[in-house]
Length: 152
Image (tube, rainbow, N blue to C red; front, side):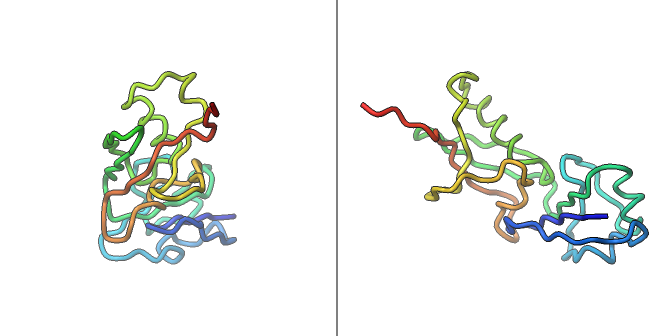
């Protein structure tokens, strides 16, 4: 069974092949107060359970975090809005909630992407939000930017 593990502040998932009867606690290295979650699921996973039992047919995408909620400050057009999400929620949901928070129409939002402040690379919207959270914090900052700029 292929497992992809996303940890706090690490943009790249660790991927490994494990037997279905391996306990999550033997697979994950959890720091103090950290919990494990299946990506897109807010329910905490039992680390004493086997991988097969814990995932129960879901894809093997796991996220770890000590936070129960992440406050993501989203910058757009010179304004900031805070979007609060669970650490196992994907960045695509952060983008969706930020678009709603700023009241941007779907047509105007078509080319919006998330980037870390001052960066030029788009964030992977399939990654969980915990990947952009600096260690020992429960907050992050991103910019909502248009990839296509009108020239004139």
